[in-house]
Length: 237
Image (cartoon, rainbow, N blue to C red; front, side, top):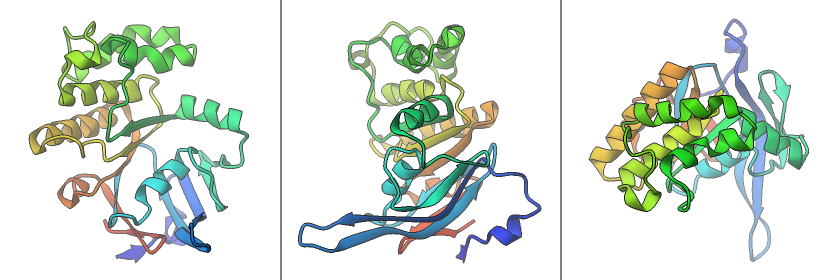
């Protein structure tokens, strides 16, 4: 297990995402604070797939939400394509997420009133990308749901719903996809299928992928593997 050394990366390609000296703590009910991130730092490069492991409560989800600008850091800097982004206004952060990030969580969070196709196209519609609407059906075909475009979430199995979530997350062709236990709510067979799908589609689209997982065997299938321990990120590759 080694720490991340930026000096060793001087001759590497420019990172898509770089985290420097991240700190995050939560106030406790009885006073004081619980430190989750303590000087965490690492880089992700274009087209990479990486997993993030750590014991329960180590702060993996918190780190992911900070990287996705869903939670604020106490200090430190996030660089995306070389530009600092964690100091953006709330509106600019929302615009940044819409254009650059995709998210998949343990629970699919599909909108029950929308069909599978409508759920996939929703991010494109919000972003004003009508030109991508024709590709939404193509994404559903790629995730194995051809012929089920007009079905509502309640008409799909749990694995199929998560496949819709994968297609939706990639609909805007985001440079970076963040997943938090995306297969944790599925049985082993379905979990394996979703992971295969994630890795193959991100490789095909050139999307950088960072996945939080509790399963070490799944974590080892990514090109890189990070561990979060005592508030710092370690390279386990």
